[in-house]
Image (cartoon, rainbow, N blue to C red; front, top):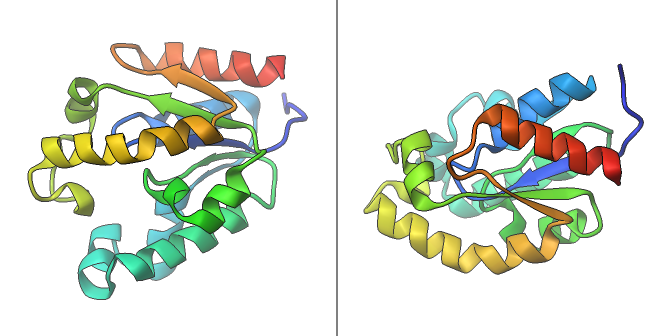
Amino acid sequence: MSVDIPTVVLIGPPGAGKSTVGREVARRLDLPFTDSDDLIESEQGVTISEIFVEQGEAVFRALEADAVARSLQQPGVVAVGGGAPMTPSTADLLDGQPVVFLSVAIADAAGRVGFDGNRPLLAVNPRATWTRLMGERRATYERLATWTVDTAGRTVADVVADVIGLVRES
């Protein structure tokens, strides 16, 4: 059953569950799902890590801003990279959209992403870097959020149910 709603955007730090939750929310609402990181990798033919190493963060952020902008042009569920809301043009696009901030504690995030080399900004001292990034980003996440859902210690099904409930109530 298709639900007549605008785009729902999931934001939050690495390990919050944006991609996992987003896929399931989209499936349950019979909407398309877009992960901005997956879109970039598919279009560029390389991983996010390779873009960071070979072309730099500035090139990645430009690709990311474009991917998010295009993703918001159609109804659906969109998961954006953890740093995407920090780009002013992306934050402007997200402002006023139905945005769910998936909040998570570092213990849960570490268990989910493993803080391995696939996360270029977390490659060196991942726990300290994650904590610093979250400190820098939290205010932006909270400002842009229509709703906040805590994912710490919760099942995907519980988080999905919360997100769907919030979207349907709006």
